[in-house]
Length: 296
Image 1 (cartoon, one colour):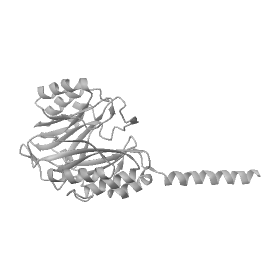
Image 2: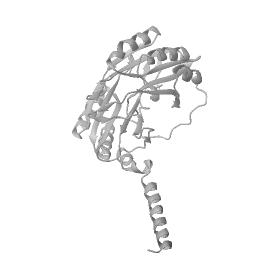
Image 3: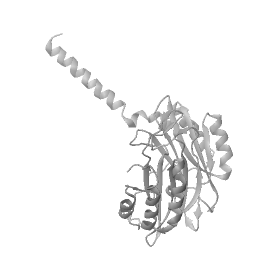
Image 4: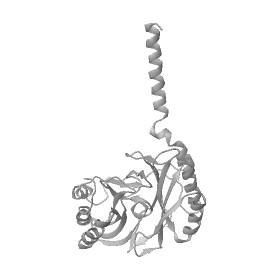
């Protein structure tokens, strides 16, 4: 091959490589999962693909506070990879009469139920949280979730509403107090704090965005106050120090349980509630975070 022809051949190889790279972008490789699920998700920083299904149809109050979907009523499902050999995890927010049909549908399609419980106390009407898991072909798992969701009143996807610039709470002070950045989502200020150690489930590494980050949510309730809820992701020795730190700072512990079946190290998930000055509550949450092996 002459030198000009060799150069032309190399150029063709480079251009083909660019085309292949464009066709295998993170957005494109998840198209089959998105189609099977019937709603769009987002590729997370750790490579997982996560889709939210907020229960905007549920009119829930806790201690007189109207709960926004993004505070405590957000179903979600996440996938570790787009094809065969994927791991799926999720949390479905359900009305009581939806629990049995959803459980039946999921199990008939090979999806495991890994937990079923409350997250808050004294809510009206009562809400249940069904944690799910599965391994296999990601689009097939996504289709199973879609079928189960069809048995609920979960609303169809809607375009995200524009976020207000000022929630009425000092989000900068909350971030400074927690030592973590947050984001506004559906009128709620959300902070996620991953654990520092690696977590595996059935021998597979679990991305932190698949439900393994401590979730701290602030919903403004007026006069610089916020209702807070979420969950701490803990190992056994951290459970009671975190309970003590939260209660010492006026934050109620509302649930303590598992979300998974075969994780290493063993994890516990602690849910909480309070409604008070937002920055004051952030200080209480920081005192609890300091009892955990969380990323700084």
